[in-house]
Length: 326
Figure: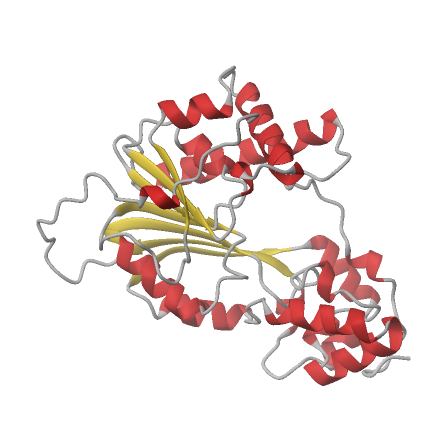
């Protein structure tokens, strides 16, 4: 029995199958191909929706916050943009080791599927693409620099979030568009594998002390510490809190879509007791919504200034280079 009553369940039951876009050791050609298809589909969808909301990529200045592999930045750079910048605390595309080579392998697969035989290096050198290691809460860009800003799955880990939202509002021009794809913490996979223990939705039901005690009893002190430290790196917000925080900014909310996960709904039907022991503020709907997709337009509260931001400056010292073998 677990601290909230009910039977334990195997944590593997929470790992719904899906195509990963983070290359792993031992991936086959089929794995790279599937991941490339998913990256291409996601990037095309974002750009298409950007156009539908009245944006234009012709001459646009674009920023991805939390760019990860950087592949979405490469794809946007294939459009007639003036510039596209990707920022993150780590840039695996430029790492010399095994992780870097796997990331570049996926990038090559994506470019080949776009009928581009250029090497990643050639695309970087021939397109208006820049990368920088940069904290999203303290960006090195002038005010009103970008026409379009987007993030995919990064908001869960950016802290403090309020400061990052303020920075995002600062660097986007009045009338500019922002897209966020947010992974909420309290759904079944919102805590990542680090937080999955043999209690359904433990991270939405147990206090930190209860979680650590259960993990210690089940797996030992060292594993419990690792799990608890991992959870502290995630923004533990409900759907309602996300809406409140983003709605408080200088944005017009164009679209707010909370995606229900059928897999999580089936699990909740199998473990209905989870709804009866939630942490304060957590609602049953938090358990089954695996994503929030948000389109925003920055409000124009002041007259546009004459500052020239035709070329967004990024410190060259922060612009990484591909390894020689890339």
